[in-house]
Amino acid sequence: MGQKISALSLRLGVNTLWDSSWCCSQGYYSNSLKTDLEIRRFLNAILLKRGILPNKISIKKSCYSLIIDIVASPLFDCYQTKSENASGFEKFLNDGSSSDLSSSIYTQGLHKTLTLITDFEKDNIFVNIILDSENSHSLTNENYTTDGHSSLRVITQKLNPSSNLITNYIIKQIEYSRKQKDNIFKKGSLKKSIALVASTVHEKFDSIRGIRIVCSGRINGAERSQSVTSTCGAILLHTISSRVDFHKSHARTMYGSIGVKVWICFY
Image 1: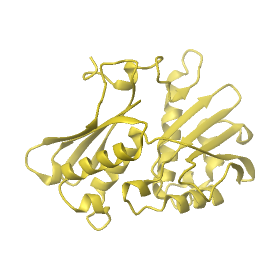
Image 2: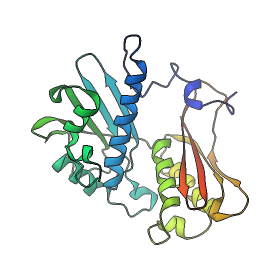
Image 3: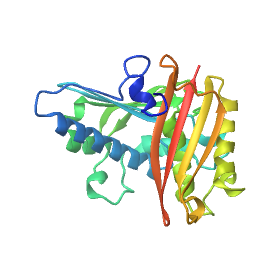
Image 4: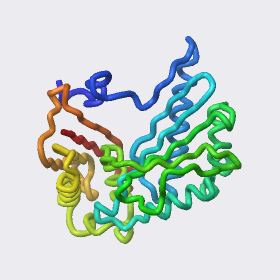
């Protein structure tokens, strides 16, 4: 059972909550779901363009307000990377817009664009950015003003890495050219690289019981598709009471798509 279905859906209501929390009347479910997808796509585009890998995005909607929690830490200096996420956050907070994106709808500023996507009033949209307290020394718990509206708040607290964060990191490293890749992905094959990532994450965070990373596809342009797996620690997929975080996505390369799956089991 644990191997054949999503580890998240199996534990919903037990020790895992929904990333989106809202209710709607009959006939409006598809529109609300489409709005959620557009919000996530927009925020992911902003963060990735500024060198920030999103960890988790939670959306809470009521009749009068929209609350978005963006968890985008820990920073990737602990994975021996060269991305400057702290400066990216400061740039994101200072202007609060996405003027470097090509699409015209994304040049309206953070709250203005969310207003266009969701039809909520600007005063009823609240954005919380949650950072890791150990790595975000220059940013403190305070409110920032975007588009003349002071409802963007930065919260620092102790966080753990998520499967979404590690999946995005591996996908970006696969899609990057060789000059842009980090040292751990330049040294050897993809199997050795994901094994080094898994062991580094498992050793650094005491709250992680085990981690598993699987990559499938035409790895390194091979003629045959193959699957490489790296596991550190214990992954209790059959135990529903165990807290398991799971995410899957795919990297687009010139020789096809490569699927990436990550499981993280916490104590």
